[in-house]
Length: 269
Image (cartoon, rainbow, N blue to C red; front, side, top):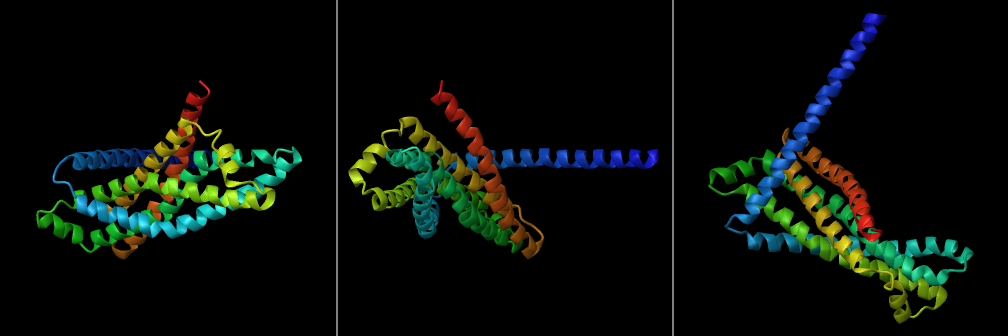
């Protein structure tokens, strides 16, 4: 019995050491990958045409789902908040509540999750298929820098487009909230804007921009890294696309908690 318990403890220690080693190797490979992105970004030649192409593809193709989701979230959040404010006779606070929630948290987070599922999976699947079909190897043989052309351009594109998409998402979310408030309280658009943005500070806008840039960079790096290093044929392509989405969302939630703590420190300092 004691011998069996001892073997079980050793087995757990061995599995934990393997897990810790894989975690450390993963952090190391990610750091090397990110450093290479910065290096290739600053080194000419610059792939401006490919960056513009990717920005257009990411932005335009994401507009329909972001539009619908943001507008519905604005309406639903307003509907859910009204009963609680009615109990305290504070429905006049609805514009401020909606504006703060959307600008500070909902617009950056929802947009990032949408792009993680749509763009991140596309990047992982696209680069993964290029890797397993040896297209990336062919680019290397033809003296083309596939990392710069495929990875750097996509990371830069989604990082640049994310703040614009977040701003667009916030506008549509506020529009949905306004239509719901106007339908129930007959609040004018001017009153909604004045009350809604009275509590929005420069720090809130700065935090939203920082979040959008960080989230965009995270989605780009995760999708490119999983796709660029895919293996095992078509199975690896599916795993790369799935891992791009799951890992991006997980990291985004962690970044959200960290950024909120930092911003709150400056807000209440």
